[in-house]
Length: 84
Image (cartoon, rainbow, N blue to C red):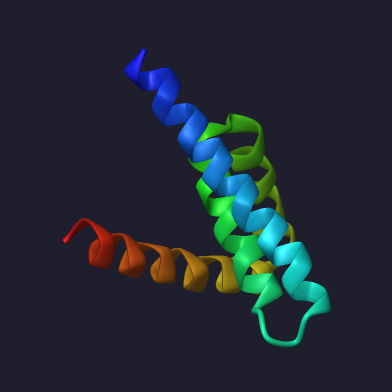
């Protein structure tokens, strides 16, 4: 039961950042691409399909991989701040 709740929370949070990223693509105030990356990183923790898709994109587009790694570092920093 605890794993199901954790998976639902991860998926919800991931999709929240994806939607925020899409909104951010049209609003100049938000960092749309950054939120999309963060959403994909979070979703990749719960979905093997997303994880495999990101790995294919990283090998095909090295610049994408570079920015994805930078976004992962930001997520780790936020996680450390939130978790203590």
